[in-house]
Length: 511
Image 1 (cartoon, rainbow, N blue to C red):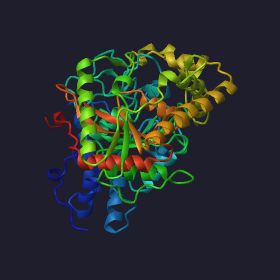
Image 2: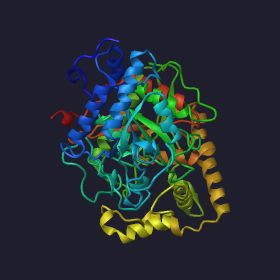
Image 3: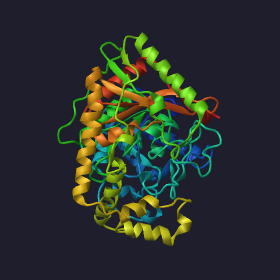
Image 4: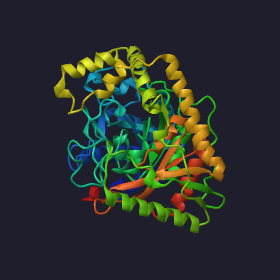
């Protein structure tokens, strides 16, 4: 391998993709050791100074990072590459266990779990490491995956602080709504994962989602992202909030990078999914259905109404429809689709019924398996929070309490899962797909379509659509396809990337 030249002039961490960085590594222009040092410097520059992004809860000890990078450099010199991402950094959401030797607890952003110890890394993280990826650290998130309380703001946790968008000068409005003022809030709950990639901390991120937690913050960072089909990725070493809805996924600056990451993630399943060997680049043969954005707005309790933002988003949305049609794609607009407001059980939200019915038992099961922790149950966490009001970052714990007090009978919960899956899936999404012969359904990312997909147990994805004026905050599209059709989503996203303008980088980071 050629000797590495000075790396600083060749690296643009904010703009460069994983594939581009791998090209520099392969040509000997940069080593993994130099790349890791540059990524650490970027974290140091902007996480708690500079733009104060607060994207990271923990960073792997520098000595361990450099030891691993040096080992991977040696393997490269000996032509022993572990995979296409050999020697590249990645950040993981603080809901996945990393190697205990890295001394990073899985905290979900809570002081109650700050000293918790786990015995082994998550299976997904193990696969990443086996492929030659370097775990740079743990990403900040909406505390407890936004399942703590009503006052949670996207990307706010007691341990990690308020994660900020690298596209917005001035940051989040204090005491904002969960998804906030549309032009300021970075979204949640996998906020640090999205911000970390957009800010150049790493080219890739591992994240998780119950309902919009991957795709919402990724859309607000102009990234490509995908949530895998729920209940297919083994949960080993993952702190699950809702086993029915939750799944792992990834974020990247390009679809090529995302496809490679998703391939690693789905390799953990008993029957790995078949992803396209080559992603298409033309719209020929692709048929999409777009919902009416006026009918799919987020409730005002989550996103403050903003008519100017809605106008700009709708204009970009309909311009995308026109462009796809002009480029040879087939479009049906608008298409009907079962709405979350119609997916109720005995007058209550089917989604909330299932979510609250699962949180307590899922949290208790995870805590019971830890070798060491100061809390062993959701009830313990609630008491810890009550006893330490100064460690809550202003967050309430309404959802914790509701979940702890939930007394939904097991048979009702089982019926809710079955009925919601059928009504959202076969009688909802599948019906629309079949009626119009669609490959996928598309909506604005700032919508409730991810709730329908979660109820159906289907994968979702996001891709950049536009940028709000004057703030510059990105917004995106949400794609939905049937279970196990991650490959179809990636194919559509790649055509989109090949035929639409390149994503904008956050220029504020160059200041």
